[in-house]
Amino acid sequence: MSSRLTQRGMAVIAALLVVVAASALATSVIERQGIMASILISERDRTQAIWLLKGGLDWSRVILMMDARSNPTTRLDGMWALPVLGLPVGTAEDPDRALFSGQIEDEQAKFNISELAERGRIVPGQLEMLENLLRWLDINPDLARAMAHRVALAQPGENGLPKAVGLRSLDDLRALEGFSQTIIDALQPYITVLPPGTKINVNTAPAEVLAAIIPEIGLAGARELVVQRDRGLWFVNRGDFTNRVRTTTDDAAQRISVNSNWFRVTGEVTVGATLVSLRALLHRSSQGLASVRWVTY
Image 1: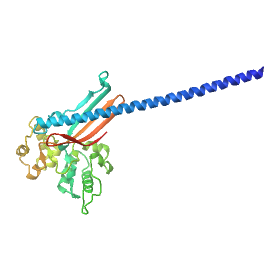
Image 2: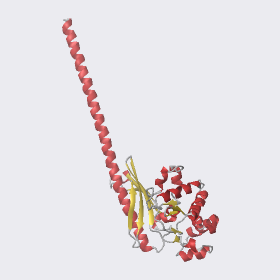
Image 3: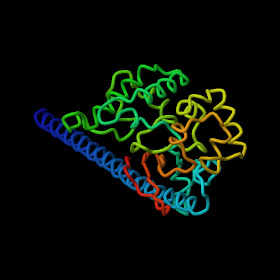
Image 4: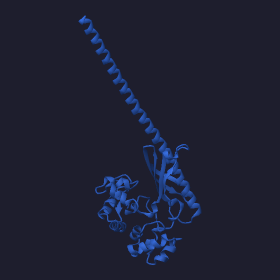
């Protein structure tokens, strides 16, 4: 009798062990399925966000084309300069599930570090301008020489070959000593990387940049000029600017413009819990058509 009870007890224990093992296996399968479902949802939301950002980039191109057709100059009161913040772009049933924010910046409002060197040699005058700009921004002016050296390395030298790849944006400076992400973020509104010879738009440039490229007006003079400009006294042409400044030399006058063809587009889309960002550089042709030179997500 005791033997039978023992066998029954062992059978019950074995059955319980089987149930526990099956439960553990089922739990593991359910957990894996939950993880896979979360991954698929995240990838779906990311793909949707990228397509929405591509739509935002196309919107930027249309805005810039419309601005070129309606305005003879590029100014900060243009439609292109208005940022978009938290625009619902989800479905009709749930528009707030996807939110879009974006902004267009005039890159020709900034100091172009491509001018720091020519044929592999640093240009002293341009270097001095950048050093002054960094001082006004409370940033170590020694970083100007580091930038100039990096630009020079990317240009053909005496042997006809560059020693480094060309810079695409300020983010490429992160490999240099002293260029933290904080420093690069602080430089973004004032410094850019564009083809050499690109002129600075006096209708959009901040006072620090104007004072750097036209030293004779000084920082105080540049700030007063910007205050008047932003109140609506926009510059209609280069002659208008030089007449109002009066102290501008012929060399400085050749560095300025009242139009822009280079723009930086930044944007981000939030879909559910997924956030995707975009950065792009656009070039607007003389016909007003804007093409994408580079884009990152």
